[in-house]
Image 1 (cartoon, rainbow, N blue to C red):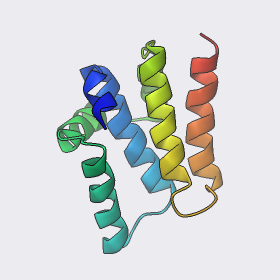
Image 2 (image 1 turned 60 degrees about the horizontal axis):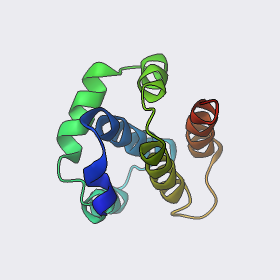
Image 3 (image 1 turned 180 degrees about the horizontal axis):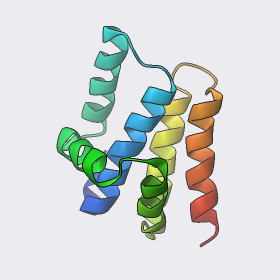
Image 4 (image 1 turned 60 degrees about the vertical axis):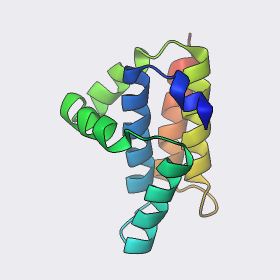
Length: 114
């Protein structure tokens, strides 16, 4: 997905955290599901996913800091791409659960206000 290359570092860090949040909210626990996660970020061509995720976990350890980081993403194309990926991940195994849908809706509402 070449669109990922257009994201700033901060946007990629937020995307990595969003991917982790959606997958954890979906209850990924088994090895097969973790392999699916590896496949997902490889398919996205997210070469520095692990680095971005490490940075996310250090910089944004809680929901409040996550929301503040998301509020700093003002590029509509980046917002749309992050929302698309979050949505696609949340429906990957059927209907999203409440936590997964909540992540999507929170980001959507935050960015809708701009």
